[in-house]
Amino acid sequence: MDIFTAMKERRSCRNFMPDPVSNEVLDKILEAATWAPSAANNQPWEFIVVTNSEIKNNIFTESEKCRKALFEKSGWKWVDRYKIGFVNEAPVIIAVIGDPKKTGADMFLEGGGLAYQHGCAAAIQNMLLAAHALGLGTLWFTLFEKKTIRTILKIDQAKEPLALICLGKPLAGSSPTPRKGVREITAYVR
Image 1 (cartoon, helix red, strand yellow):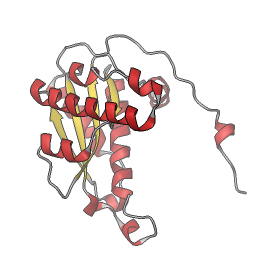
Image 2 (cartoon, one colour; image 1 turned 120 degrees about the horizontal axis):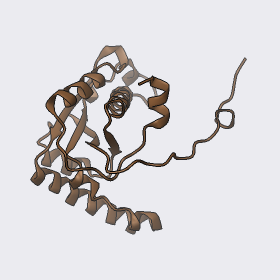
Image 3 (cartoon, one colour; image 1 turned 135 degrees about the vertical axis):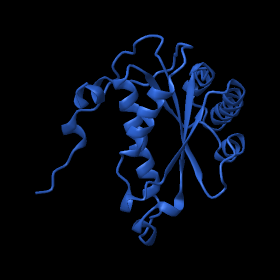
């Protein structure tokens, strides 16, 4: 699949088929993640692949608590209607863990110490595109308290759970989402 087609056609998936994802396909997706750029080539990412239904249910329970708390704090009506059953439906969840010690030289700059997160985000994008090219659906999910996910997945206290990638065969296709035009969001300094 052409990279531009993959970027344009990839969608967030919230409805998954129960079909398992093979280890061979998972390895391809995870390898694609490792090709991402990172500050000083520190490769600040680690991945935890979750297929255990009990652990997925614990993640769902945590995320549902967060969803309810977010609605109470924000009052945003869409949050009350947002259903997160896909956390249990997705055959695979890949937790993306970042290592703040691998952030690079930005730790010495004002507002720095975030380059490890940027590297992990690039790894996530590679995973999303690779999964799409392999006919799978994904969702980049961050509705969780890091402390609780750290406990559920037994993550080292020095490392940070940054995202959960829900992954599996999509139940149905998704329609395109609107995007702002390039000229609307771009300024040129010449």
